[in-house]
Amino acid sequence: MGATPDTGFIRRAIELADLNAVRVALYQQTKDPELKELPMALAMDEDQKELLVSKAVAWLEHNATPDVLLDEPPEDELRELCNLATKEEMDDLDFNARRELPAFNDFPWFTRWSGEKPEIPEGFRAVVIGSGFSGIAMGVQLELLGIPYTVIERRPEPGGTWTINRYPDIRVDTISITYEYNFEKNYPWSEYFGKGPEVRGYLDHIATKYGVKANTRYSHDLKSATWDDERDLWVLVVDTPEGAVEMEANVIVNAVGKFANPNVVEFPGRENFDGTIIHPSRWPEGYDLKGKRVAIIGNGSTGVQMLKPIAEDAEQVFVFQRTPQWISPRPKYGDPIEPEVRWLLDNFPGFWHWWRYMAIAALFQTHKMLIPDPEWKGEGGHFNQMNDALRDTLTAYIHDQVDGDQELIDKLMPDYAPFSRRPVVDNGWYKALTRDNVELVTDPISEFVSSGIETEDGTLYQVDTIVTATGFQVAKYLWPAKYVGDNGVNVHDFWSKDGPRAYLGMMVPHYPNMFMLYGPNSQPLSGGTGLPAWYVVWASYAAQLVVRMLEDGKSRVDVKEEAYERYNEALDKEAAQLLLLQDEGAPDKNYYVNTDVGQPRLQTSAPWYGPEFHRMCTEVDWDDIDVS
Ligand code: NAP
Image (cartoon, rainbow, N blue to C red):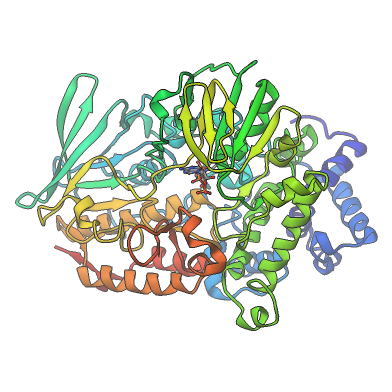
C-alpha cells in the first residue's frame, strides 16, 4: 500500500470528484448527521461544499485504503443510502430496479439452480451467437450454471460493435463506470469516456477471465438455424474458414446486436464517384485524412463524434445535414481521468459504487421528458415543462457554441422536441462547424458525381473522400441469417407484417428455445439502468427459462402466441402516448420509429418506464410460457 498523499492532493481529488458520490460514500463510512442534511451538490452553497470537502479530506487522511469495493449493506441501510443519493423516497418498484446499480454484488440478477444442479442431458448444448457485450454476459451466465455452451462469433475477436466500429475518436458517450459489469468493476479506464480500443480491451479481458473465450469459436458466421421438431433442437449451418459446418444446439441465444447491418444509401450516381466512400463501420485501418477534402453525410451519434478529429486532419470538410439534431454537452467528455480522481477510486471505500450509482440514477428522471402535458401545451408550451426546459438549455448551448452566428443557428435549430430521438453527445461538433475548413451544407444532396457531391441548388462540393455516417438498418434484426421455426417459416417472413417484434424483446412464438438479447423493443427509452445491467437481466431471463426446462426434465420452452400478441398490443398502446409517436416528436425522422409499416410504430425501444420493464424482465410470468 502506498503512502497517503498530502492534504493538497486529497483536496484536489475531492474537488474534482462527483460531490454527490463523495457525500454518500462518506456518509456510508461515518454516518455523520451533518452529511445527511446536505442537499444535492448542485444545490449546495459554498459553505456546504466546503463542509463536505473538508470532512472528506480529513477522513481520507486517516482512513484511505485500497479495500475500496464494499459488500452490500443491509437492505434498510442500502435504501437509506439510495434515497440519500438523489434526495427522494423511492417506492419498491424503483428501489428493486436500482438496488444493484451501486454494484455491491458481483452477480446480481444472474440465475442460479433452485437446488442441486440437475443432471444435464448428454450432449446438451447452448449456442450463443455473437461475442459482443451481451454475448459475453450470456457466456458468463452459462459458466455460472455449468451448462455446456459455445459462442460463435463471425469476427476474429470478441467485442461486437466495438471491434467493428473503428472510426476516428470512437468512444462511449455514457461515462465508462456505467459501462462496466458488476462482476468486473473499477476497471482502470484512462479517460472518463473510454475510447474504442479500451472498451475492446475491457471485453477481451472479461471474455478471457471468465472462461468465455475458451468456449468461443471465432470467424464462425451463422447462416441458418432450423428447428428440428422431432428432436427439440436447432440445426445450425455456420460458415467457417474451413467451409460450412453443421452444429446442433438445444438452445440458441442471439446476441447479435442492433447495429449489425450498415445503412448503405444508394445515392444517385454513387458509382460515378472517383474517390473513396466509407461507411464508418467499415473504416479502413490507418486511413490517412491529411490534406484530403472530405464529405461527412449524417449528424447522428457517429457523424457528430467523428467531425472534430477529421476536421483537425483534413484540408476541407463538408458536413451534409438532412435534419438538425439536439446535441448535448457532456462534462469531461474526452478528458483523461486525473491522477487525483484515480487515487480516489483506488483508495476511498465506496466512492466507485456511489459514483456509478449517481451517474445512472439521473437517467431515471428522463421518462418524464416523454409524457405530454396538454395543459402546458394549451398555455403555449411545446411539450411539457421539463422537456421545454431542456430545449431552452440546448438552444442556448447552440448559440454559445457557434458564437451567435445566426446563419448557422438557423440551420442547426431542430423543430421537434429533445429526447424524440436518441440523444447525441457533442464531441466538439458545433465548434468544429465554426472552423475555416468546415462548412455545413443543408441543401439536399441530388447526386454523387465523379469529383464530389452535387446538391439540389446545383452546387458541386469537390471531395476525394465521402463518409456516409448514415446509420444502420435497425429493422433487420437477426438478418441476414435464416431462422426457421416449428411453423416452417423464416422469422423474417413471420415479421413481414410490420417488422420485428418479440415478447419482452426476447422471445417469438414458434421459435422455441430461442432468445434474443437486445432484441426488438428491448432497450428502455428512458429510466434505464445502464446497458451492461440490461444485458445481464436479459441473459438471466433466458437462463431462468432454460433452468426451469432442465430442472423439470423437459426439452422445449416457448412463449405462448396469445401472450406475445397481448404484450405487443400493450406495448403499442404504451408507445403511442409517448413523445416519439406524436407530432412534436417528429416520428418520420427517427430510426426508433418504423414508418414503413402503415401505422408508425416504435420498433427498437421498450416504451415502459424503466423500473417497470425491469420488473417484467426479472420476474418471469410463467402463465405466458410453455415448458414441455
Ligand atoms: P443515425 O443516428 O441513424 O444517424 C444517421 C444520420 O445519417 C442522420 O443524420 C440521418 O439524417 C443521416 N442520413 C441517413 N440517410 C440519409 C440520406 N439518404 N441522406 C442524407 N442523410 C441521411 O446513425 P448513427 O449516427 O450511426 O448512430 C446510430 C446509433 O449508434 C446511435 O443512435 C447510438 O445508439 C449508436 N452510437 C453510439 C455511439 C456511442 O455511444 N459512442 C456512437 C455512435 C453511434 P436524418 O436525421 O435526416 O435521418
